Amino acid sequence: MSTTNLTLNNGVELPSIGFGVYQSAPEETAAAVAEALRVGYRHIDTAAAYGNEREVGQAIAASGVPRDEIFVETKVWISDYGFDETLHAFDKSARKLGLEQLDLLILHQPLPTDWEKTIGAYRALERLSADGKVRAIGVSNFMPDHLDRLLDATDIVPALNQIELHPYFQQKDVQEADARNGILDQAWSPIGGITFYREGDGGSTLEDATIRAIADAHGKSPAQVMLRWHVQEGRSVIPKSVKPHRIAENFDIFGFELTPDEVAQIDALDKGVRRGPEPESLTLEAYGMPIPEA
Image (cartoon, rainbow, N blue to C red; front, side, top):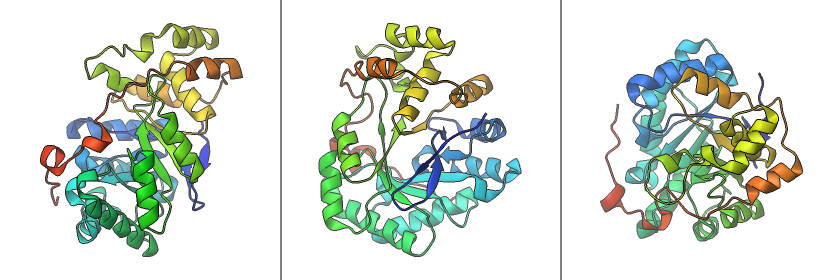
């Protein structure tokens, strides 16, 4: 099995499918990342707030895969926003990962209630980029107005915006804003897994009749169809699992192609219902937490 690469706005390439470790317990993370690298993933996505950067780094070090073949992405949590604080956040993440240079470092959320800290944090990313400590910088969960305000106050256009994006929540306004500015969309919860974690009327994408019919037509799983949909529309995807058979299944999406009609059918499934936190609502009081030094 092989993957395809996408090119960021600064010329850096990343594999279109990455392996995520959100909500992976530290004791499960190293084995899951090791299995993902064995299967063929070469893009790993973690975050300071996940509490498992150290285990990601251990798996990378033990894998035998050359460092320059693995694209490593992590995120700065809002508790570490501000210029000096974010420079230190890089040091913490790099130390836990056991890496001198990160391929991509992004802000995990906007912090509308303290926008100056958000701008300070992004300016720190710009400094890290200039110093060669990170190869690309970006954001996560930034809405169009957040992007506009960020672009007005900083110099480097984010390479990527990681957002909740699956057939039931497509955030087309954010996709359009990203496209206008040359920012790559990266989908977290790309198969709608977050619909299992929160109560509501969203249902399960894995049981959706349209997606299941398309999956049956190709002899693939609903998850594979959704990941293929993202990749065909030019997005980066970050599926997550700790189960070896799911890790392999999620990577096996390059041997078939959806028809334009099938893509359009999935495009039409958008319910417009967010399952993750509302980006505008994040505050340090509600979501702040200390990120350990080690």
